[in-house]
Length: 348
Image (cartoon, rainbow, N blue to C red; front, side, top):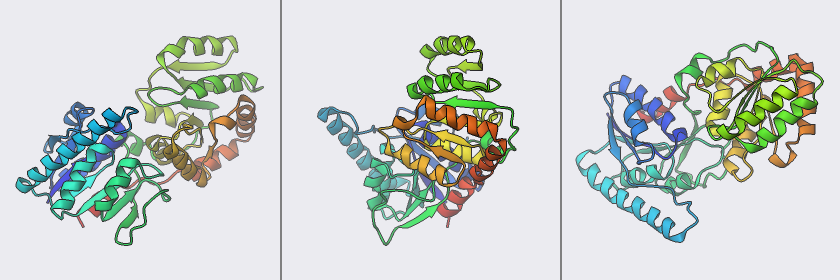
């Protein structure tokens, strides 16, 4: 079977696409992955050896400038026309899109040639690009059981598949909690100022000074946080990047972080309790955090309510009652079979 996989924009879209591509190649299918210039080298470097790569001229239309927005739409239109012509020569049996504006041209071209198309939404709320592309899609696959803002379409099938994660997270699935008074604080690759401001102060206010914190932050904040933790006699490892994230999550009893889809699903895959503070301007993160909180494995709290006083009280209650942390970890764990479920759906 010839399968076209469309992705691009960020690693959050690319890694799931590559995982599914690898599985489909193993099953003997011919794969081409299309992506934009921002992640083209990443895709070329990480793709399965027998998969092809196609460049898509596309970018997001979220720019403030009207001129840049129009230019972004022009690029998507040109790429849609180019792919429509290309599909005359390479007619895929399926098109699988993993979100972002770079996937829109493939979805449109597939619609033009009446090729069965599947779309994966990584967040708990439909993104703008996916919402636009859904008019041409018959199957929507979701990362979470509940997804907000799905347009009403009786002919569209919605399937909860989960979100593919990297192999090191799958290998760490359902790891038992060790209860060693360890906290991981991570705001993603760029850090999060609210976590840098609130978490250190909350830990300083705690009577229990046995907690060890691994704190990932922006490079410019490392020295300041190291000095604060040292002055407060709090055991800490402050760093700007974590290379072995799965291993670091395994060693933690509690994670404090943002509500990105990949972060939430990685924590659910390993089975770790968390305090999730969604980015205030991002409805996707709020929806992701809400889904996680409903499992009973996490607290989802708005930035405005995330204060040192609230966090000190919450951490004190949790670490004074380790049985509750264990219970939260059990509820947080969700088996991740996303790759096989998506691959099975694609080749039906």
